[in-house]
Length: 209
Ligand code: DX5
Ligand code: ZN
Image (cartoon, rainbow, N blue to C red; front, side, top):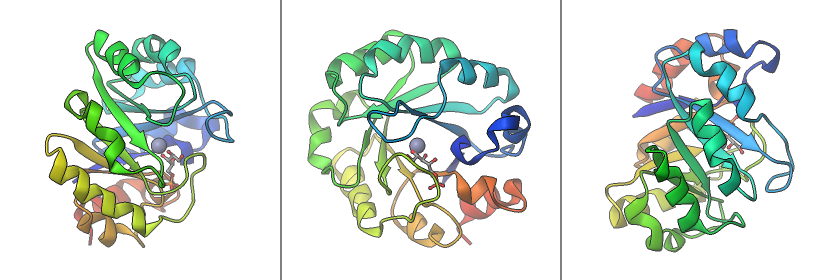
């Protein structure tokens, strides 16, 4: 089980320091919101670039933006190791995947809670990861919607090569469900950064007990 702390829940006034708390994690999840695809605005490529030399963790960039195509190059240059965008965005899905691959990094698709697994089929071969949203995208600190987790086994059965990430409401209260879900990567914002000892919490979430 891989753990990806989401910096959305970190103290934005001290991101460089906050990132040190994620030592021992596997990926750093970075949420990018444009105020259009979701009703919230987070950070842009310049902030991502400023964080690049603060950690060796894999930068797992999650684009919640309506037009990802024109920003792929910027996030690659900022240090993204993998970029996941939403199948529900307005750009052509194949074009965005190809643009991500043009820079030699891994591409992923994210699906909202109400989006079925069937939408992934035409793109599955090109995908490294899928983010199953277990909350409506836009904000940290929401409650995990248990029904969304059933999609994970469906994805693993149909596309065994794809790594599945769960995003939203992953914390000590839901960790058992998340472990049983068959996911490969657990993203946790509030669960990690608001814990008394984030590093210990990462180990706890990884073990599931
Ligand atoms: C929500 C984001 C999540 C968020 C998770 O739109 O995609 O990555 O940071 O936060 P928690 O773990 O607090 O639900
Ligand atoms: Zn996310």
